Length: 200
Image (cartoon, rainbow, N blue to C red; front, side, top):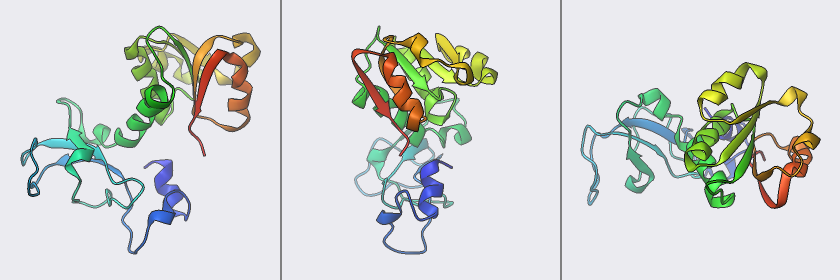
């Protein structure tokens, strides 16, 4: 369950796109192809797949079965468990878009990921490291070893963080916290640096 799910069910989030009830929540899933629609190719019954579908319009991914657009799903990598794959759609796409589509992160650049151990943050750490960026992230001390194992070069305990000590160090900030934390972090950007913020 993602924040958008409970926010929508509480009357916020994407609730403005819900035109009729009952409403089955959920936009991401993993499963097995049961049947193909007319003209669909690239899949066959029995294929393990995952997807993030129809957002922000209702997709019904909390149901036992659903009909998903073929261009919004992908084959599940071999060895990736279904329960893990089910949580990749929204958080993974958010991390990718924030880093590369909006943040324009390039190999060799430095990125600060605020809330690095969070749902989007831990995926962003891995994607940025794979791109060849110098990755720093904030988290609690309990998550230091976890983020290091994911490829984070510098792990920063957010409870002891003085943004002034990081002034002018980063090409990009991916902000998973928002509010004053994001504003305070602006000092850590290099001239011409970028900030992409996620919380609404």
